[in-house]
Length: 418
Image 1 (spheres, rainbow, N blue to C red):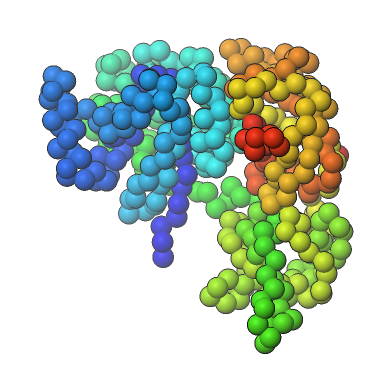
Image 2 (image 1 turned 180 degrees about the horizontal axis):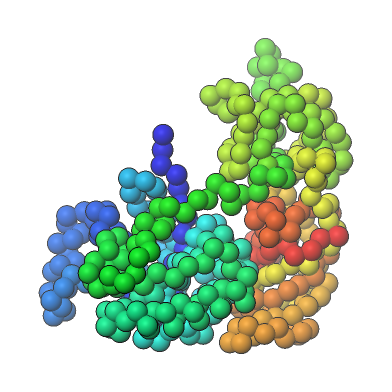
């Protein structure tokens, strides 16, 4: 059986040691090829270091960032005996808020770096705010550079108290702090000798032990139809299946179903994969659902539990991260892409925008600028079947697309739907 995949995003201010931490994780879990290691050792010697500078593993991208060539999210994978990891490394600067949102949108865990000398800074608050906005289920504050504060238990205690107060204020789920030294390797993969007073897990042990099965919504059955399967062969002429990815709930043959937005009813005849029928399907499995009745179902429709349906909405109030260089003005017309359906929309109202330095809301802004985090009201030209984002990250998320250029201009999370 394949090890379970955990998606994590790392965030932190410039020089918090993020590159070194990622390098340390890859190095200590033996993910680095011999020729890569030789190259890093040579480069470290040329720079006059008496240690292997693991930040060099990831710093090719940083050099590009500093020249302004790319500010994208870098993805890396590594594997341990217990788990597979996909790591999204998001840039730290304020002007790259949109990249942090992109990297964090599918993450189950956010690892937010904090410099032990500086403690909680503005970037810590910003990254924590984005983690709360995106409802990331697990947060780890990696308090790094503990070697530069002489591995002080007292200093870690002060920072931990500040971090847990911030987590409580923002309503972060499952937040915890772990003291580390990425440069020396203490408490990253191995325990090390610097902090005998810390009796918690190392960072990797904590990441390996996080339970993610319960993070997905198993109460509300949701199945956005991606493809209608009608084989052409004569012997299969009466076969009709609906392919897609389970976005919520547990799906079994015999379940009642409502097709949205039409409201037609049926029952699940079978849930299938290429290997045959399943007893049950869970998020995020890709399956084909067959229905007992020949009801009209098209791509973009949503199959759901008639007892606990989503809201079939014409109006959305949503959190938005504006990602375009061109400002967003009220009355703008855009496309909403939500699960497998696309609808036209008009921006009815810019409700508020977050002053990112203070995390306070400013009411009724005139426009949204690049990287603004805001609340907006959208009116839809046709209905979408949605849930609040905090209830279901799959059916509560959408993107906004500029119809003229086909550019993605915003990421959105549904607050309310009517």
